[in-house]
Picture 1 (spheres, rainbow, N blue to C red):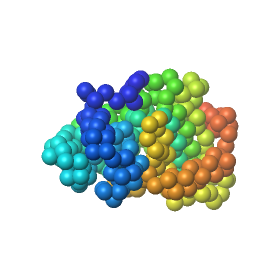
Picture 2: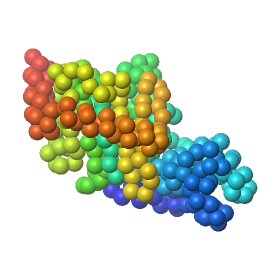
Picture 3: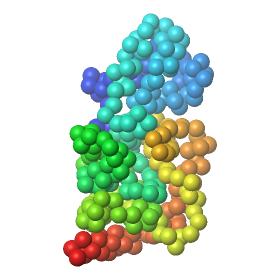
Length: 279
């Protein structure tokens, strides 16, 4: 949603905790690095907590109360900030997306969540949970659609996605669902809202064959990289790891089709899927 990245402490529990953490740290006369050392985390991690790009876990809340002399303030309030409509392993990454000024993503197996249509998202969620009640699936789809509304803002975040050809060839849902999904991406690109490249099969071996990459940049916090597996995920802020994954992403963009050729492929495949569905 437009402006959603401007945290309002009066309406966001994470923003409130971040603002209170910054106030308590400065009152204690500690820099982010000094506070991080006492919690055995990096100074950038403290900065991300203060900026609201990382959620405060209970074990850190307890340590912060001890180090900063805040009684049990952070312990009492971190529970409210941790509530999320997203799966536990992805919740922190989804919240970070809302604050990001730029997102660069390599998707090897499926269309990225921010680019999915409701029908495509429904097919993905149903595949993940084949025995779940319909109500559960619809809640997951609604959360995914809500995530994508950050693209309603005309300028931020920058979204640059490299999508493997395998994600486009795998029929997820029905062929008409694939046709709609590909045309949706083309529409976003023509509006100048996203940059999309296809990593074709004939690119051969490449630097990210081991899995997906999501890089996120922020205005007032260090960058993050998110790694995701089946039912698992983690955010990483180590500068060396982020730097390496950024280089990997740059290699992928060099191997991928140009944005213009990628859109032409999207359009051709959408037409093929629609024709196959019709017949």
